[in-house]
Length: 172
Image 1 (tube, rainbow, N blue to C red):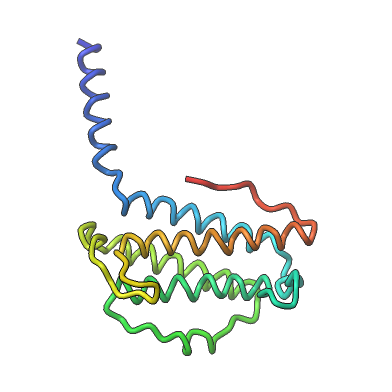
Image 2 (spheres, rainbow, N blue to C red; image 1 turned 180 degrees about the horizontal axis):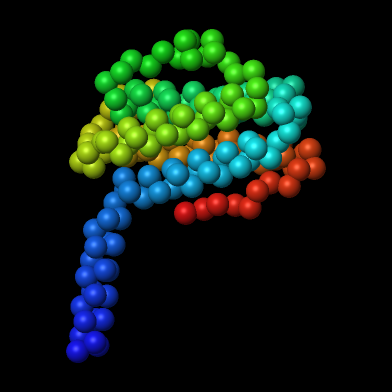
């Protein structure tokens, strides 16, 4: 009897788990981990090094973090809400301290998470106008994550150039 119950439970569990794994749920899981990892990286850099840039043509550590935030809010607002995105207003409020930028990043990650969580999964198939041509909202999700990953990789180099050990990688 226990064998049959265990087998039944195992089969039901596998079905429930497989039903939960969708592009949306996969994104939300990865987004949370991406947030945690980026915030650890931001915490690692001492505040007096937030203006560090490896070359004159690069953004500073703080500018990279702010750029990530602006991009998240632009894509999240423009493609996953009915609100109008105001980049100029956002850029006028450049943070002055490490604490401010970390707080703003946290809120931006949470904002995108909530918007995507509230987006119907079928809406991800809808194509939207994008500067690089028509894209599905699913492709916009991929861009959201890819952009964070791209700049986070740069920030890891910034830490290494300052002899600061980056936090352990956080994947899925």
